[in-house]
Image (tube, rainbow, N blue to C red):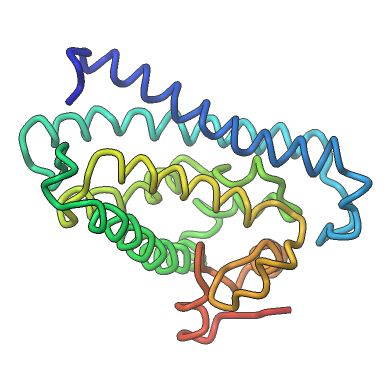
Length: 238
């Protein structure tokens, strides 16, 4: 599976790829909305004030720190795979193409559930100032804020990965697609700009809903969906 790479090489390559994927996705959205088309899209800006350069640099710093922590987790991931502890498989024919797609949808649902409840947990007064306050320091987020976490929050955010690895049979590339989608959607909800077409789908979380969360903290805890927020009475549409 690892093509003869040593654990150290996998760690270095994996960490670089994590960072490059994030820089590409967040960078494209930031350049499009905050530089190239800033004036054209200004009417869709949720909070009219634009963040200072110092905030953007802090977002980038904490995001880089998060992905360095994610990279370190590769040591454990490789160990689990090599020992045969995971439900990973490499032959697409083993479960078929339909299950390949279904497995990604299952990952998304599990992650949304995990994210909602851990997100609410770190909003508890005993944890917030020590863990989640860093992320909420970006009251008017940009795409670079998507993974701008305190180190402990970065570690907590990794907790759903073992659930997927140990419980869900998954093709290696299904996991790659899911994590790429995770990165993309997290960047989108931190965009700072309203996306009218996305708001038509009531079940989906939006930049508007998450922007309100950054301002008011106690509502809209979901990542991809509004399901848990609506069920638990923590949804505010605005």
